[in-house]
Figure 1 (tube, rainbow, N blue to C red):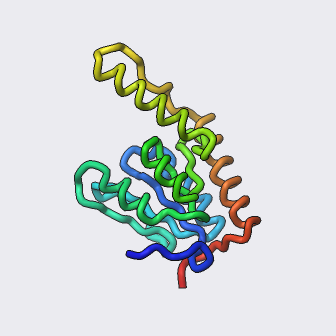
Figure 2 (cartoon, helix red, strand yellow):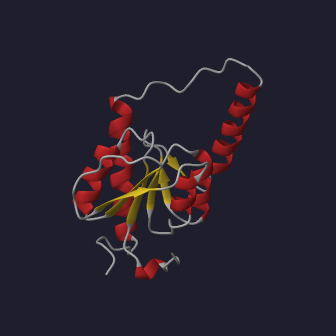
Length: 166
């Protein structure tokens, strides 16, 4: 699939869905703004029967979902993921990227996020006890809803259109 220019495509929402705890919240915000949602995973995931939602099941394998999303997300799109390398690819393409806890990945923050991720991966592989992320809670869910809505409103104000491709 060839990438379309920003002017030819409405805002799309891509969800890296395999371990995403905020899919239902993302659907609600997307429906309110009439955005097309691509739910991308390497296993079939239940999605609402709605004309704005498209389930994309990619082949199993390393980075297949990431490659699908990163190959399509452009400036004017929003990506939901916890995957820092995927976030870096999408930020580089100009997309807005938000973690399920509401934290945005930006050009200013992605370098530190990648460095932290790589450090933690090195510590884990060396056997260091690093602990995991804090439990996902209601505050995270609320922060995500606010961040997603804000990102979409900003894009609309910048002239990006909602709605499905013609």
